[in-house]
Length: 72
Length: 358
Image 1 (cartoon, rainbow over the protein chains, first blue to last red):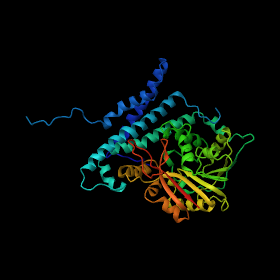
Image 2: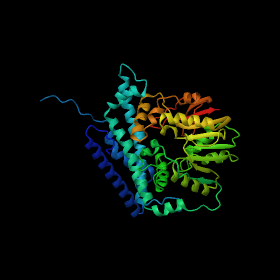
Image 3: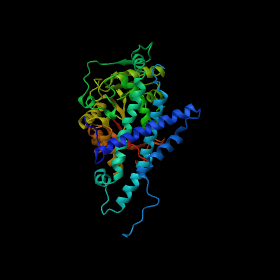
């Protein structure tokens, strides 16, 4: 049974899924490295900052918007 | 050990990641969507008044597809992570679920002949694979998943305590029935608040009732758990003083929801009360539209109906008096007696308390 898709091109649904799986893997490895180094797990603030950082391209507004270029 | 799921470190990291994603989605992503929606509406000649009105505007915002995708897929990631945790220890957990309970305070009555309604068994509600009923392990998966949905702050089920303590009118209740009790989290606070009452919890799912019974015994509380359908309990007329249901009626088709309210009325003694915690539209077109979409994105096929009707009016139609529908703020306020929805920057579910008296 096909799952719900949300983007005009269903391939986008799959690609975003891959990106998120990779992000989850990075987070899991990050926690493992912290444990091996004997560092504290980092807590929710550290986790939330990590997630905000990787997902910010989805919602941010350009702080230096491209100017309107004149045709040379 | 026993009934507790042992979560490996890697899986715990996955669960934590889902919690973080959910926070980002409900705060940052919703906030950005809200801002874009407000900007679009500010420039519109006609302002949306309902969720349906808001639909075309919201769907035209590029961020909406992303918001919707995240809602469904975070939920799916969550189930994968909690299933992984439970499956790693499946044999021990299922054995614990079926182990005899020595000298129980309460009781457990399962009904192997009960035919699960098609509306219930035909949907993987909340996208949980196999639902909560099809295998013993699913009760543990559901329980662990329930903690995640509340952003990890629901370990002591403060949400349910708040409902019981603030939303249920004081009364001398001798017999209390909790419909759709699940693994007991909604039922336990009634034992604490009304220690003299006989408390009964019913649910369709045998696995969650088994988990409810064993967890309740471990907590030292006395509850009778029975496998029955809320819309057709089989209890005698006028056998309870308070009937309650938490997050139940939005999962029922509209005719079944109406039948369930009528069944509650039948079960109550004169003067008895209902206290139901569920959803309702808020009057904020954006939130109401997103909630309608949530129904589809979270495999809750009948929820859309409850967002379009007046459940208090239906309660009145089946016989209840003094019915009231109050927004419920789970952050500590409980029911808003002024009927005003709280201002909130982040996405949240539109909880309401439905009260009534026979």
